[in-house]
Length: 352
Ligand code: ATP
Image (cartoon, rainbow, N blue to C red; front, top):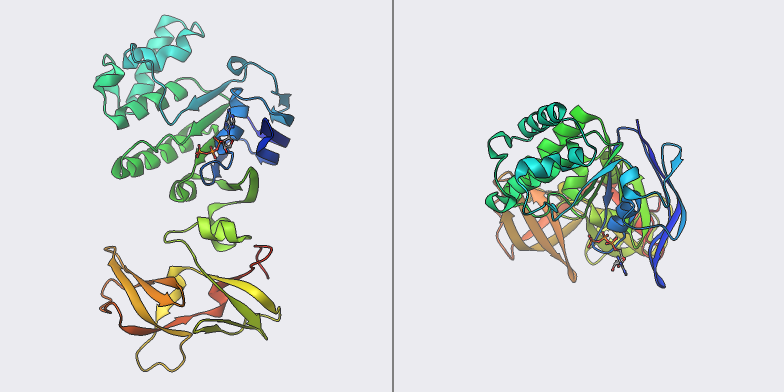
């Protein structure tokens, strides 16, 4: 059983504030993902839990134990790094067994645990190899095995999949998800990859410039983004964000008009709409929100991403895989007003 609590935690490097007044309760057995762009403070937050960095102010707890100042080895956390951090001169078996060796686990139990964990991450046949004799994916599994060879209170994972190629990353993502389900250990996972966050997390904390912009389940973050930053960061392709104004419940921007948006008048508004909520209208449909020329057409296999030229920017929609439109052809689109998000461009917050 372990929860992790951050209470008003800040971290400064000199004058630079890397993490600002951070408050978060990671629940027991939860898979919590810290998601954000490079430099937003994710790794620093995680390193403070590991004890590799000390908070400048505020308190960090594992359960009711305040861990500020406690040496890393007494925190009972296991960390998996992006670089794997394997010992190059030790075999796979010795790398995996290292945490057991330093805890003086008796030889028969040592053997039993190595065998079990190697089987779990499918390294059984490779125990006598050195790290340099392994592929990237196998090295990654050694790093993972070393973390799970004992059951710590908390797993800390810092972009563990980022060095893998796309195919292996997808495969390891599913393995991690399965492993978490089996092991039921509280996990804090750092990534800048929103798909990893969406697929792995129970809850996602979206970070920007040292603060949490939004905390919620992947579904909440996707369906109910509270700020422009979150709206633009989550989703692939990213949400279309179109500047314009709102008068009498009608959003207007170069050629695009959407009505039924409530009563807030905004001189500087930003309309957000996801590609899957923009639909190509029939050629005889008079009731379109926009008619615009096609800028590009990309077949992804399961569907077609179509970008339209809208003023100085593009609007992307997800069309059927059999879409036959050509570049420069003008198409009409429809957008349901209940599928759009309206933001105040000044405060960058959602307007409800
Ligand atoms: P990335 O995804 O690139 O690893 P991140 O979100 O994990 O980014 P951090 O590594 O936590 O970001 O860094 C947050 C900020 O703090 C960055 O601007 C970084 O340059 C700065 N920083 C981190 N460590 C130090 C340090 N030891 N000294 C000075 N500045 C640091």
